Amino acid sequence: MKGEKNEVEDFLEWFDKQNFEHKIFIAGNHDFFFERESDDYIQQTLPKSIVYLNDNCTSINGIKIWGSPITPWFFNWAFNRHRGDSINRHWDMIPIDTDIVITHGPIFRTLDTTISGQHVGCKDLFNRIHVIKPKVHICGHIHESYGTIVKNGIKFINASVLDEKYELSNTPIIFEIEKSNNIP
Image 1 (tube, rainbow, N blue to C red):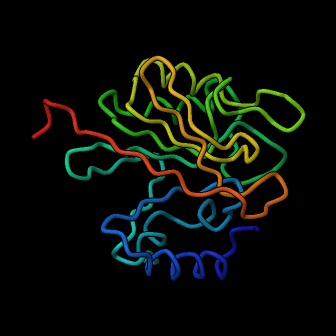
Image 2: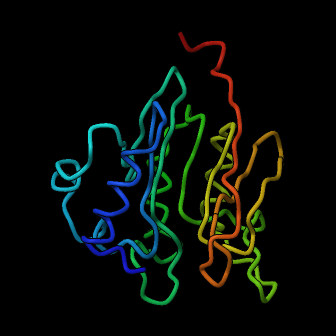
Image 3: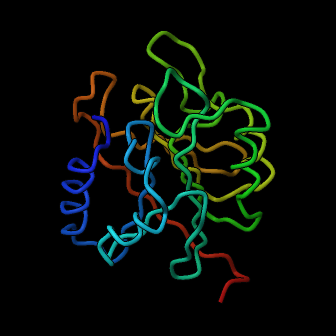
């Protein structure tokens, strides 16, 4: 619940055992350990089978994946940034040729509706996503907006497996993506 070292170690041990060829993750607003520790220390802590994305990318089978834990300021959680220049510094790092963008929070007005009916997604990220036009944008954070939708040729996925009460209630979302024709 607070992303402390012992919770992170438990997660990494579990994640490492999952039977998948590729395992990628980003941190989120509860993951204070990942916000406090240096990237070097985090990389040394990770099992070799796991890729952690923090405002950077990886490529798997010709598919470029970029990820970030950053979300607009919300109470005093980890990886919060104020809207505008502070958060745009992160979104500006997303390469234009990215196929999949993974962020903790959603873009504005897309799988971002809270239980009270408010749209709380990031307007700045909305703008960047619509410039980049990735094939897929994956987020979580707003638990009650779990699901998928396609808009403007982009598949948006809110993959939160927890509901608003933090209970495991949603199944993982599986999707397929083809690599671009211009990628070897």
